[in-house]
Length: 364
Image (tube, rainbow, N blue to C red; front, side, top):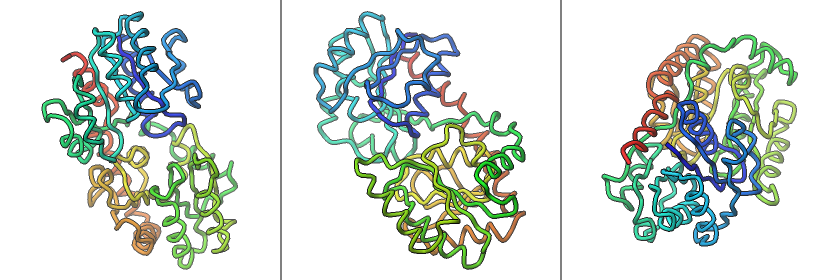
């Protein structure tokens, strides 16, 4: 099949990782994959397995990009593309219009987030062939807009075997040595774009409680503030300074490979206020890390009482208590980590995700 994947995302996050993994998997299976990206994107190098002529640069600045739709339609006709698959809300209408103009391609979208679509999408996207939801909560939201028969649930996937086969101890020591973190210190970390909904403020409030009991605890926050003024990053770094925790915190804008970081952690924390799925949680599961997460829809779909500790959203005291429970019991950390790793391998494999998406394409 000849498939066009569309994403107007500028920066790289969970949705874009899904985009790359899906594109690579489909290419490996012999399909001809194309990508439409915004010219100013910061992650095109991750699609280096695609020939340059298979990548279209198009400005998708808003949901009503008629000129962009025309450009996509011309590309679809020129390349004889059969499936057009859009991944961000602002891409849905231009992709839908492009399929109508080109007349020879099926329109598919994936919804990666929990924010509901607007009622007008019911009419604007009438030529939709399939809507893919990455979690049950997203599926419920999509059912408010599209007919049930047009919606399919396909969870995000991860290459569990690759994660399981890494040299965990070597990666752990390497990361800690590189960042001057003692091998016997407790290390607690979180990953996600720096913004209020991701809960880094709650993570810092919990850290201030944890250090009262575990004086050798260290913390790492991975993520960029993609806002124009970087206000939230400044705010939470100021909070760390107020608590006099500067020397205990490591700040990383991003890590291309999360395996060394997760191997180095004693506990992974997701303090998010809203999560449609939680790809960072899934990676922590695959790495065999002990996990504490807020009870978001995504986390509840991934974790259970044997694979992670769930706490109330926005409650730093509960968060700190759950982390402290893990720090005080190495056997419990190992047990939860192993259970989580097995669950990730059995239920959220990358091959499963690609198989199910490929089957949708073939059905069309």
